[in-house]
Length: 375
Image (cartoon, helix red, strand yellow):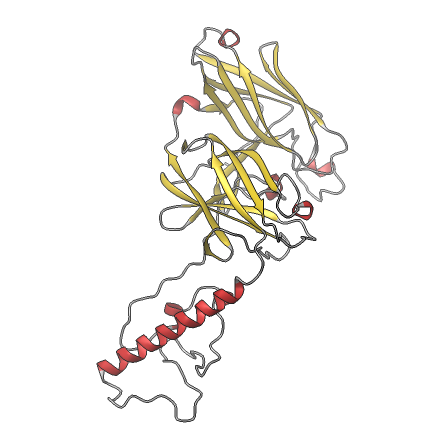
């Protein structure tokens, strides 16, 4: 299995895995000291500085300093449990109040829109597709956006750990959004091969790819201008929808930090095999061509024997999800069904001047998922 990270792997704009929300918890009080990591959030931008008479923490075992000349001294003695507990509560209260004030100040920015998400299915097996409808209700007083922001969509497990994302460009660029308008569109997302089953929470927001700036929105905030919009139940993978990459494919490739997101490059012709369900099916392909500097679109054809099931053009830089209705009569009577994917033209990365790549393989298209759904 190859684990070489393909350059520009993120250009697909589809699901990916990795990362973690920087949420922090207050650790238990111990030995009368409040450690810096125990009370401050992981990102210093989440907590404003304590300017009102309270200094900084110099060490993890050092209590807060006060700038007033008289300082803060316990009249009950340094070893007094009561004094330490009072100090702990005072500092905790001051941090909560100060951080709340900071959060309120950050939220003074005019919200741009209300995000929402609707899933075609509430429960989806791993490596199976689901149609997701995204909706942004632009606020009547929304400011004009001069730049185009991306949508981030994070799927998190029960502990808040980020499992995968469905970050993408909205159907209408944000620079064209008008106050009071509704932006709505549907995308097909495949649940990646994650080591998790159960409920996931879904957070959304808008950010700039350059610098990561996020916009204020209206909704249930989970911090850092991310907003919870729903849940999805992840189920175990089902064998009835398993499609095997047979002949004519290169080895599996993954992003090292996101092992659940994987793909195979096709050669000029590759075969796909699955168990014959004996009835009509929908065959789906999730594919792209990340090499945006190819001169011409590629012609893609899907066949069962000599019968053409689908034929389309794939523009350089394009990502596509194809749905093909295949009647039972085409599947035949054998236990397994074999389909052939043909690509014309292919390319060799080493021969592309702009690619700066020494890869001498003959490549067709990059396929993330092949899926069969019996009707």
